[in-house]
Image (cartoon, rainbow, N blue to C red; front, side, top):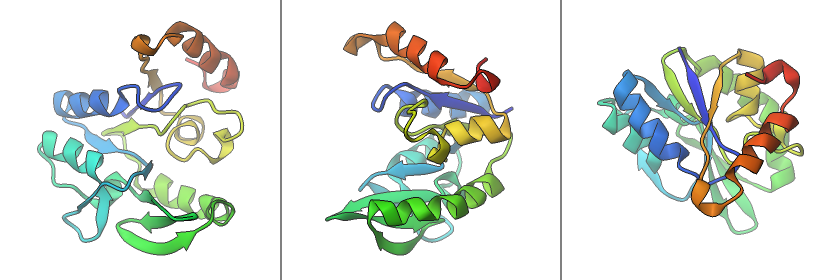
Length: 174
């Protein structure tokens, strides 16, 4: 059974939890979209985010493009968009947003039930939920449950969890 590891914020430990769970559950690491300048060559050509490669190797798997179908690399005034290991070029944010419906179709085509899925950023960002191909849309449209990871060291962990729960539509709440 697939599971999403999510959080109300970035840098809360999701990658560590996914790394551990993929090993413990014999799962496949997956992050639909990652923004990072740190990439790693995949076994099937191209590149994916370093952390997804690390997670794959930790699980005894070879890094493959489907484990990180969309890699965004900040570049000057825009972002380089890499899809399944191949660069589509540089885009401004508004241009990238126009690509999301097509990218979402590509992401859906590779999600499987043996994946431990890492969401990106916060799970319930009201201004971004319907474009969140890494977390919310996977949960909403594919029915994959999410576990919320909290970083208590930064304070506000319980309030953040309460906020996520109340922002999420009732149809996707656990």
